[in-house]
Amino acid sequence: MTFRIAELLLHIHRLLENDGLVTEGALVVGLREMLRTAPDEQLQLVLNSFFLGCIREEANVPTATMRPQSLSNLLRQAVVSGCTAYETYLSTILATHIFTVIEVKQHEFFPNEGEVVKYFDGLSFSIGEAFRLMSLGERAVFLGNKIVTFVQKKNLGSVGGLKTVGLLLGLDSPWDQVAHHLGRERKDVTKTVADCIERRNAIVHKADRNLGEAGMEKQAIAYAWTRQAVDTIGHVCLAFDELVTIRMGQFQEILGARKEADHV
Image (tube, rainbow, N blue to C red):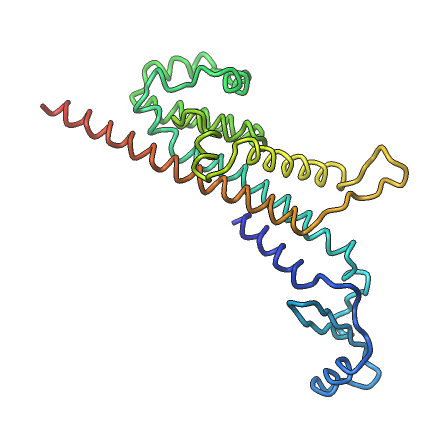
């Protein structure tokens, strides 16, 4: 859903982008006649190569709202929404499939990889949970829920987040597979995602301002850069989803073969 929000914000920015509101001229006169407005009612026209819009006085929209500096906040919010979608997606797909992976790999399911081990460094079990894990018939469900709950309380908003989730779901070298699936270089894809997440953090935590500079002006942000960043994150999640779907299909075949063997 948040991907749609990011795309909507980009579309709105594209429509409202302007070099200054038009408040007089033949076009304003023509629209005034068409709308049958009072002669003294202020009309503000948003005009670009894609869109013509008329803001009537009763809308109570200040002129400053439509300035490029103000409209650029739509782009910033698109970055925030895209990164939120990335985190939410990774958490959701892990919660959906981790139980299958545990059931297939059992005690070998946890990847012995440095970043993943470090990520779960704070995960612990109480004595009661440990005994429950030893005796519980549905170990996969209990352990899967424990992992999902831990992940949801931590931050998946990084390039390492996708790697961690991918390894947990049985994908070898997740970023290599995603880049290959997209027909792109890994370093280009990961850098775009990392830059977008870094910008998101600057927007959320520093209002996108250079706090070390006099005046603390907001950093400039362009539609093209934002479009590329949001699209890349969306394509990464789509590619990852397709790869995980293939992997889960393979795991389901393994589980099916085991059940058949048990009935022989």
